[in-house]
Length: 298
Image (cartoon, rainbow, N blue to C red; front, top):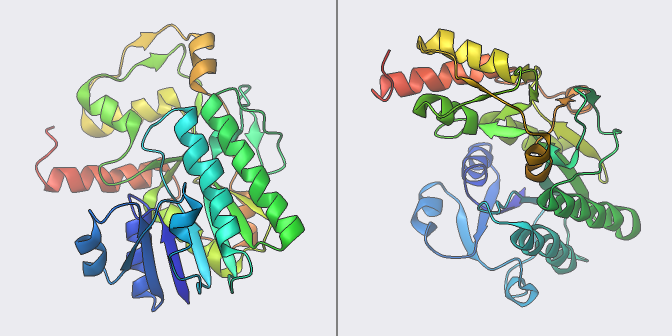
């Protein structure tokens, strides 16, 4: 297959490397040429355009079988999200119209689910996010699903949980720095997925997912905040983080939620088997890597 990866960063670059390994012809789209040497070294053909500018896309070839949009916002606010996700995907839909495209996979986020009651969330659960950035992600999903229904655009949406892996993992880094805090009683649920399983889920979606479908991409075992830090404390022989009062209003503004995201549909329909079924498997590997590099002290 001829594959275009839009956004060759933390997920996109290793995704491209794996697709090249599997024998696909892979192109990587970035706004600048800064990573061109890295892409070429990985066997990925670099392309340059800004997805927020439709005219810049029109300069590129369109003969791709598969397209993956895993562009990251870079931590911007709602305006940045609107440009990169909503306008960017709209431009990609327009650019790829009447092309030979067979599948388009977009990595959304489980933050579109705003549930705070600890309930189990499936793809059929309602989405009504409070955070402005998550509202933009929900809007973006709507235009992709509308294109799938009305224009036969082969979009598949992966709602991705908190990604961790080599050099990534917000709560883990906070714990290592001594900055972590347990919110209230620590019962709030966390949903995670290792970067390697994000890549595996994307490839499974490219290969077998029907157009117009949504899949939750989270690992098999949501974990409470307290249990997550308790496991890290035991593994690293460090004290538990202190507890602080939970502020519901701050949580709401930040889009912090309390839910358990189910991956049952991903596993059942795409037959995906996780390399790291829960955070213990994944973080044990990361702790081993950091220990080998001398970056952890016990």
